[in-house]
Length: 436
Ligand code: SF4
Image (cartoon, rainbow, N blue to C red; front, side):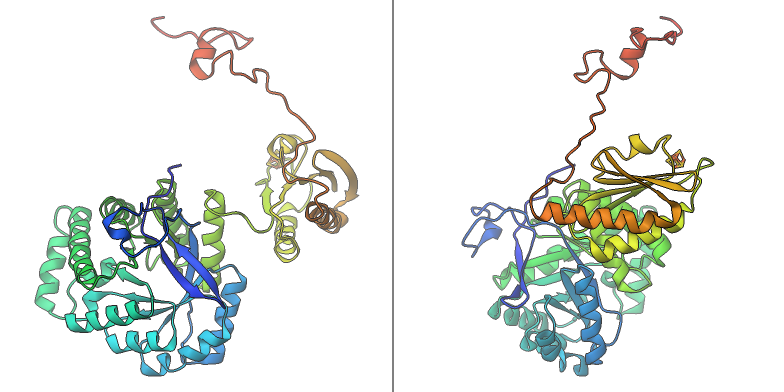
């Protein structure tokens, strides 16, 4: 796991929503730290999403933003294709508690209206606004109000749209012998061109995105961009499809980049309810250790021929209840039997091992109950809630093991892997190697 890349931080929000920092860590003596008063450390990676409904439908839009905020979204973006959308932005911002980003395409006036309405960030693709003076007008308006801008050079939008011949020529080149190489070169060239406009206006509060529907291109493009531009990166695989496949594409690309220290804010994009984008985005960050977990972490076995209870249903019910009632990051294990269960669940704060239509429940390694299958859910949940109360009162610590499983060679004196096997220290007949 690599440490986060150092970038010039941007800040979104106000006293009411709280301030969300994206990126950080660029030294103050770096030329692009111009205007920053204090050195920053990289912020935890934030999760954002976008509303699926019409922004002008104010009540539904506010309700959707509340739902996404409750699910854990740090930032919510709304589309503002028409004036009727920007006209309601002020009211939407007043009724919500999360930084709002206005997504602007083609109409620079929508950006100006959004800034006037008090939006916390603008998403802009300069390539979609043909007149440079209009882009400059948006930059100056953001600068005046300290609003950051995300510059998008997403695959689908940097190819010339207006001139069909130019588009065909570019597409021809893109799909020739080296699609990725050529596309990354276009993305970087466009970024240099766009950033030059921003730097010339003395504007540096910038995030960058370079999305594609191709996960491999996303990995390569962001990796190259991260080497060249010290601005926070907004990661995403765009149009990733239905949740089932979109999850894999997004997690592979974003997980690879984040593990390499690349990426400061993420958006998963599914053809589904955006609440899943938030839930899966958070889980990805928890899994990579990029965010402190809120709520329980559920470990569950996949079941096999040893199973003697309806484990899949039990796991789903436990998951739903934990999401509703547990806020401390305890580990909860639901295991199908005692054959592999105890080893796999080692370190779990609360565990149940099923067998013979019963469940044996443990709290930090101590057996506390054996209950019939019909009572497993209620008893497990009640143990989780009691444990949560004790954690909150400071009476117990999360992850405190009461059962020590001591490995046979705790200090690794016997070596490991092939070396250990070849030197006959396994306690059984060693493998022989041809030629040795
Ligand atoms: S814990 Fe038991 S039931 Fe579950 S997969 Fe492992 S061996 Fe099978």
